[in-house]
Length: 159
Image (cartoon, rainbow, N blue to C red; front, side, top):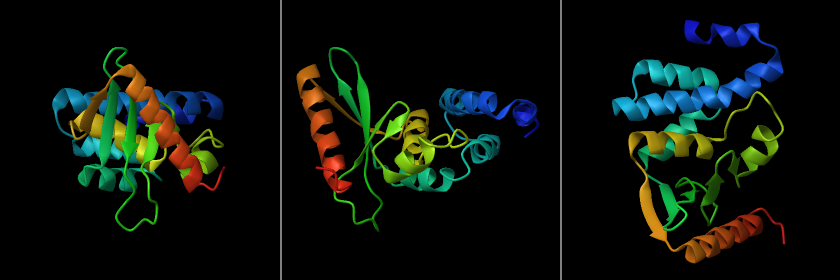
């Protein structure tokens, strides 16, 4: 954890701005080495204490789907709800956004919260090569994204 001592020396806002790039750096290192070491898990636990356990469970259950637009190579992810959840539809994850309530109530409103468990699961699943992949034409990709975002709004009671 000495690696992260610098965060304690920075003003809160500056530290909050560094944390996402640090988590991405940890996941990039996981991808480069092909596996997550104890050190990686400790760093992620420090950076994302509230989200890590749930994210690891999601990755273990292989419920992260990577949806790619063929021409533009744009990507969004669908993260299925856990088996005990009453949620009917997967969460939509885009870079720095998730349709889950935790993202809306915690991550978007607190500078110290890096990601919800779904967003962190996407980073980990990509790093570990544990995503399911689907490719669509750009038009079909956009329609799929729109469809899943509408389902997310229905799940949250917004009409």
